[in-house]
Amino acid sequence: MIVKAISHKSNKHTAIKKLINYVFSPEKLQDQNGNRAAVIVKRNIRGYDPEKWVDLFHKNDANRIFEHKNRTVLRHEIVAFSKEDNLQLTKEKLKDIAKWYLRNRSDSLGVCGVHWEESIHLHFVISGVGLDGKSTRISRKDFKDFKIRLQNYQQDKYPELSNSVVNHSKKKKWH
Figure 1 (cartoon, rainbow, N blue to C red):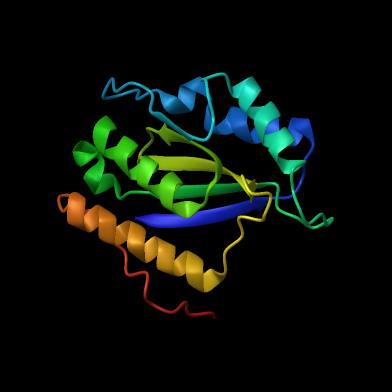
Figure 2: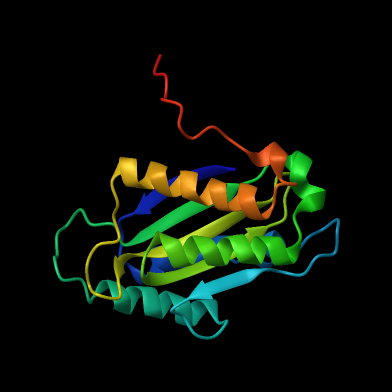
């Protein structure tokens, strides 16, 4: 699986709402071909009203211990699987992987929606500040280690998803 991370800096209600609306767009959450139901996974968030989630993320950012102008308010992280594994990716497997991700990524607010597109992928929205008021930022090395642990979990529990295995230990080559 490929994991991508995008930082969002604006704490404006409209910016948070835009990201939540994109990730939880009904068209993206519905499987147009396989008739699989929407998959939404939450951590430290109650209810299923995206508008209330926007308020929770906004309020949570106000609990930040260390305030600075270049802070990350939200982390948008995406886990993409190979399209060759689409038939193997059940609602239960995706839910389990999403729960593992949110539980092990940070102790913060987090929501995940599955996009049933050509390559099925998980979209995570994670608060930039944890429940303790501290930043959820981790170093590149720690994020790389986290991706390797995630993939090890996937391989141990779901070996049938072999097309989605990526070598995260490779160094990037810059041209």
